Amino acid sequence: MTVWHWVRHAPTHETAFVGWRDVPADLSDRARIARLDAALPVGALLVSSDLIRAVSTADALAGGRTRLPHAADLREFNLGDWDGLRFDAVAARDPALSRRYWEEPGDVAPPGGESWNAAAERVAGFVDRINAVHPEAEIIAVAHIGVILTQIQRASSCTAYEALAHEIGNLSVTHLVHEGGWRVEAINRCP
Image (cartoon, rainbow, N blue to C red; front, top):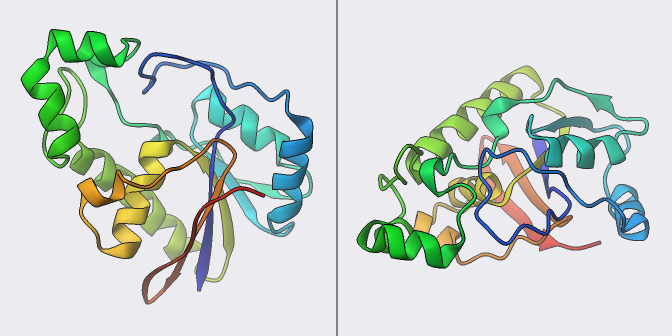
């Protein structure tokens, strides 16, 4: 049994879309980070996306945990030409495409970016490799909202559209268990 503790990185305070754009996280809420740290297993393996907001959040949780190399496969969705734009600017620029992107997630991709299905495949490949190498481990994975939602979709066998309905707050934990198949233990738990 491999237990995944998916942690969404600390807030960035960005008001525009942030995909692969590397922006820092705000780690100033030390009390909340301490509560999160205390709620996570000490002996777990710790991995993060290679984007600085995830790396710095993982660094804040690293004490006593075995750190795995940062993983580009745990990056947020590549939002391509939309990265750095506000929602209203994206809707004005690509009205039909942006509507389809949110209402029909799957193979729809932003210009120069990746689709839900492409991102989900990228993340699932990484998760499968870790499950194979560490079949009895607890894994703390510090990542991004889109990454976590793809794994909720996978574990609950819901559609991408249904997965998008889940709230995933910054510094929240989503527990997913792999034991032959997947099961969801908790979503968006805020210690």
